Length: 125
Image (cartoon, rainbow, N blue to C red):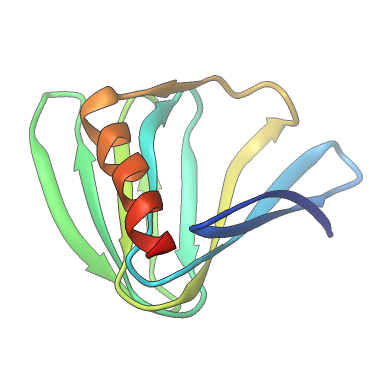
């Protein structure tokens, strides 16, 4: 397991597999937000601990909100914008099934990214 990123929201770690695919483990502090972007590859996430509130902007433009707790999974299709708020400190696992390291393109969605950036300041307080 390799540490790949840390900021006021928490930290991220990469688990690299022999076929050059990866799984990302993400620790997030209560009140911090993650995401605010879409990917060009499908992505599956599982909440390992804590509770997360999610927002998704679907391909048809519809926005949905929902919460997930430990053991629950969600799937993002390519192009679906997604963002999460940690309701409690917790761990999340992300993986882009069958995608090699470096093959996935992430596109930020500024209305959501602005909220993610604001949460970084809030968590510092």
